[in-house]
Length: 457
Image (cartoon, rainbow, N blue to C red):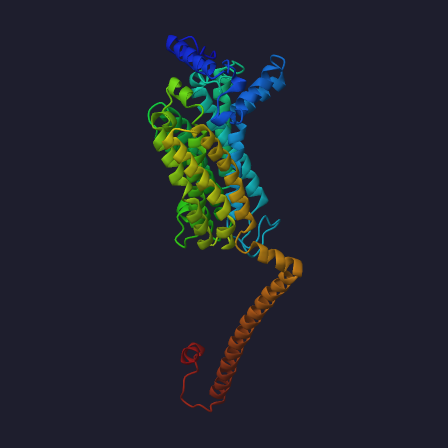
């Protein structure tokens, strides 16, 4: 199977000439390295950069192949996906984190975390490979993505298919074997949602952004379900998706709140990101609010930026973090809202919209990692356990648990001794009656039945 020639079609040529004219009018000269961004400050496409590295390698060399395959995986996006899953796993409320051995109290396993990381990485890489394969023609029409590996023919379409499906299969298997079936199903389902729903929907409806946000919200659920399955006290519960995602005791609420946070974050981030390439999206036939309805694009960004403070407070109420997290996350949440308001005002006034988009974009870039780090640093009960460990109180607690176990064993032994004593007394009484019967002291009476005596007691 040969890699298709993406600019052979007449319509594609016309669209490419139109985009080039737009770039020339902006003074970019059509160069991919000078792509128009929000105020010219968007980071370069990581896949295009890696494809450039691969192109400089000798043909048929291992370095060229590996660099091309890595660029097909969209490494920057994959890293973000994996980090959100890992953060959610780490935030699951358990008495101990990454304990090296099995304890009486639930703990998270480093081996499970390893399988979660590897499986999520492979699933994300497979989904991104399928996305890039489907959008190769569109990527050729956009200055920021036209240097990607399939456009530059660094890989054949067959190689891309094998890579994407292989990563997806291996990732799902790793999650199934090393984590649990629920997480494996979430990983496989997310690949299908991204490649088969979100990607083609970009040419049909602006709702593609909401579907894409749903794709980004699933990795936190995967991390939470991985931790819930690891700490399940019942083997049946560990394999039930209802127990891991819809627990009757409310323990799954934290995972859904983290998923909601990731879902909401993608709107201010992408709505600002899409402002610069909006003319190219339009010429390539990708339906984005940035060009179909700029005013609504800004309103959506503002609307979702307002939910972060309530979501952070909800994480505190759900017992995922300490209440201090609601206060410490407030400044960065307020910063995002301020930039979103500015973006909305400038877009409505049609003056300085590009600069406002740049401000919101970079605020969103910093917002997510800051919020997640603050949550991890203020995980419910974490500092208390650390302090008890440093102060030596943890050992005292262990001794107390051992004392309680010894007391319980002693009580059971005493109860057992008491029962044995009563049985011995009944046996002695029966033997006395038997002796009396043999001696004839109980004339005309039948020999005593010990079972009758037992029922009388």
